[in-house]
Figure 1 (cartoon, rainbow, N blue to C red):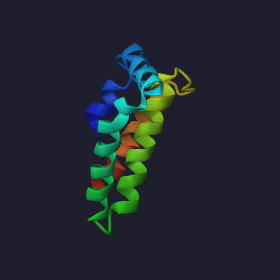
Figure 2 (cartoon, rainbow, N blue to C red):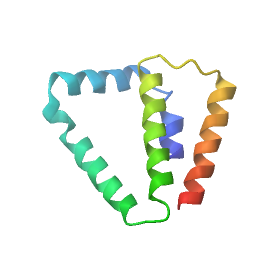
Figure 3 (spheres, rainbow, N blue to C red):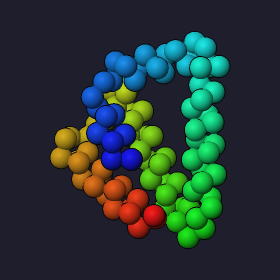
Length: 94
């Protein structure tokens, strides 16, 4: 998760191109759908941590999307505080 959050801001053009390619040809998203299916299936095997872990994953994806679309209103400091909070939540969900 930490690597994903670090990389989310590094190449917005690449991320935007991936989104556009998926919108143009939805079949390209099949591996992502499968990855998400496996990820959430794995999280579901952890009954005490599922809710928290799923929330962290979904928040991370939301942050990525806002940054990819260049819609994030967050300052660098706010973003870092949110990332730190998500990492803390992920640790307690593990």
